[in-house]
Length: 115
Image 1: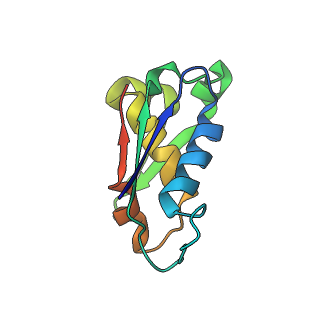
Image 2: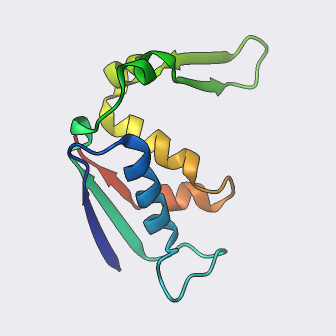
Image 3: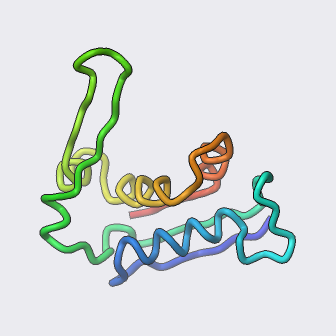
């Protein structure tokens, strides 16, 4: 199993998240197969030191739907950061960059984010 460590100090959220998503999928490997989960783990350190624009904190919305009428819940990036912390912000960004299929959940288990 390959292990990668990324230091997120002073970098933008999207750039680090896209690099992490690419590593988690195994796109840089010679043995890349899109239907398999690669044996790669990625650790991201210093997630709380990411550079995020103040306007993005107020404007970015995260939504989830329970499936019931009136079950749509929304919260801003700032509220999510207060409630769950910066590692969850980073996890959500990477989740959005992975394919929406059965492998997404398995691939995200190989991501470790520390504040």
